[in-house]
Image 1 (tube, rainbow, N blue to C red):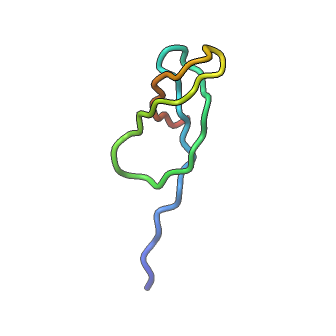
Image 2 (cartoon, rainbow, N blue to C red):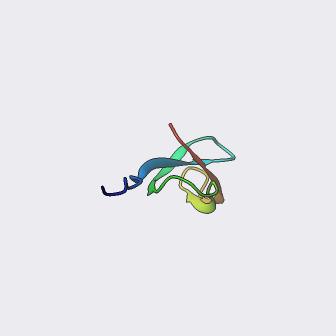
Length: 54
């Protein structure tokens, strides 16, 4: 029998300052939560974005 593969899940990157959903990613489950510095077009600057599942 073949092993079941973990499918990639859609996750959202939420701005920590405004709470807006600005980016989506497809990531395999497991591992640590992402926290990236990405551009926020409404604030016109780079802010921290954290991973969140909807």
